[in-house]
Length: 205
Image (cartoon, rainbow, N blue to C red):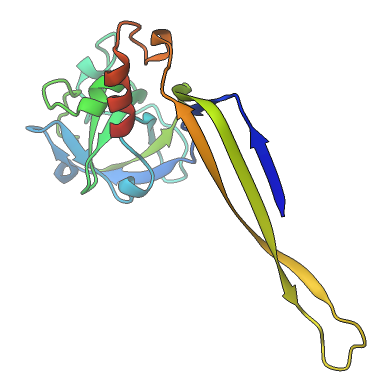
């Protein structure tokens, strides 16, 4: 058994980049009225607040120059459609996805603030890849304890004169005492965001 103890530190949340999710988008997958689209397996790959890079790809997963025509041109900062783009997503429990230009709007999930969608010209493949996001502060640590224990299995064979054992899986537990006092400058992209609102956004995330 090993025991570690500590006093100071901080807890930060960070979303790591993911492998690309490949899916086919078709006109029936896009709901213009609610600015929402759906693709297979999205609830297992994306969570609300992710910054996602969406690209139009061919059957081999390679980028192509054809445009993402199911996204309204207003979804890009210069008002021009491209074959790829990055947006924050709001994912509902049944796999519906809305696109947003900011993290806070994605957490809110408002239809009015979502990027407008249009019916695509046909069915084609797209890739969705989570981009590594900025680290978001959660709390300062006051004290913490972590202990681990490795199980041992008896692998003695019949007739052996000495017992044999092999280390197997590791289990553990710990305690963490926190002080939820994050400087206002770390409360999201907006330095004027109140800390209570910031914690609420993290809970939604």
